[in-house]
Length: 450
Image (cartoon, rainbow, N blue to C red; front, side):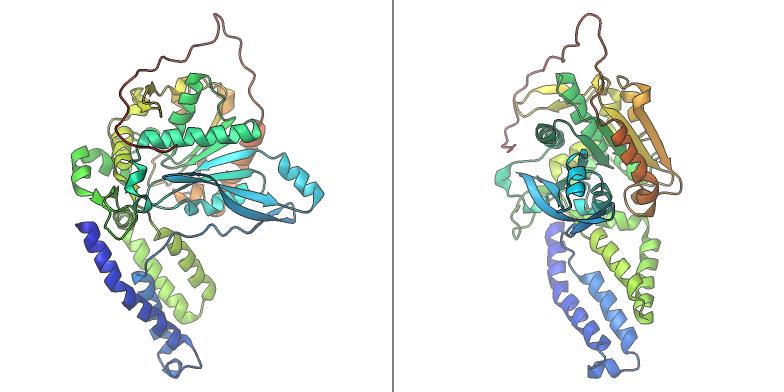
């Protein structure tokens, strides 16, 4: 019912938002009679702010057309490489007619960026992608809004997320021979699980695994986000934040955690900051500071665009990551596409170098939560592990903005380059370790497209 009420309210607000946009343009146009009003600039600014507060924010575009590679403009063609029911593997193909640049592009490492499925779209990592494109072949997981996925496509579980990541890694390995993987925030946990399962089976694993600001061990330095997940019961989340998609969307009837609830939670974490930001935007419009006003628009066009998450995936993440800590406790079993259960064993990873990145002021994933991965991956030699703490950086600062570009990215780039060749396999006495036996259980009564 709450979802339907929200959609009704949004639909009723839409004409008023359109009116506010038109009024803002009328008062800002010097050739309009309204533009001659002594308070025209203030009225225009007020209507513009009203429009932005009431408008519907759709999924943004990455919009990366070119990147600079050593002084040469390289064209970017964005395309969908793999289309699964709940996710698209998106590739940023680079083109150049400069022979030297083209040769350099062909030899650069292939990187899979696993974007969060936690409320925002993958475009939140636009700055991450743009930086990486200068020296890497880049792919990203572009998660779909669950309210747009028809019920006929089945449910989506945390296990499916892990299996999707494995499929994408295998695709890059098949294409290039090997690859690197970067996970930002929420996906650090399922990505570590995916690589662990591949290692346990004896499959080739990525050459490097970079984990940034994620809740590997949410017990360490718990934040407000962690406390909410840990202090409320599983039943509370199921009864209070899960709703069915209204009939006017393709995914009508699907149980989801609505994006508008997640957005409300984001705003509630720092309400004063958002209020101040909107007031500053109003003052920038009055002062004619178009540069600052446009920066505000770009940020909130991204920040206010949210997606719904399938209820099963959301609830299982709460239970597995924030309540039962199954990864760090060694009790996490993931269901494979064939219905079998496999235990997640990070200690089986041996050939994948890994880098962890944390922000000193991160208020979403607290200090030590991501670095905990080093204690789990005991099979990786210490000289193939590295941890970075970014001074003065919050959660978003480790993958976007000046600190990402000047401090974090150069170290991520160098780490990938350092380990861009498969590690030599150590001689093992008594033969290679066998992959753990799979425990068979009945498959879920659901349809999942792979």
